[in-house]
Image 1 (tube, rainbow, N blue to C red):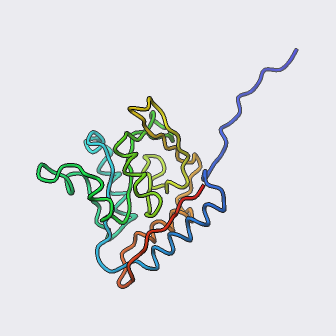
Image 2: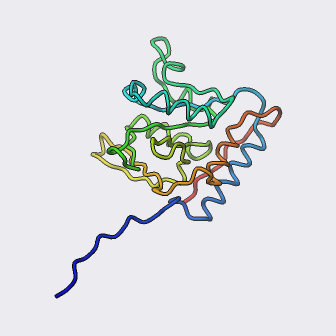
Image 3: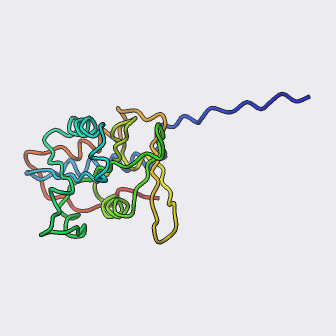
Length: 198
């Protein structure tokens, strides 16, 4: 008689990016930090209106601000209104980074679902600016350390981002991304560069 099969524990993962990809990302973030020009650093918070009304929103916003002192955090109503309706193409080029606050797939899940708008915002910046996911469990996580996959029908395609279940807040990739978003006293204008490579 065979013994019952015991369920296996979930694999402990602190990043979905391999070491080479992480090193390339860190190097690219350092280049951004090195050439940071003087003036305000503008980071857009991509968050659904219903999440801003959630009881935990103030605490999550405070956590983001704590990691990015001196950074100008922009929300939807800071940029778009009746006079200037939503047009991401007119805004993306003025930003230094993007933070996505997405809905968790379920309570306690490391997976977060991005709708078409947030997905488009991510795609426009992820190749040349710091882009991070803010999760309830882990705080800020660089997109490079997450896994991703498309879900839903093509006409309503969404993006699933999964943060590592053993994410470490002292990760070198996060430290590099935060340094790239730190305001600088003097620097040259940064040129776009490819940060994420297959």
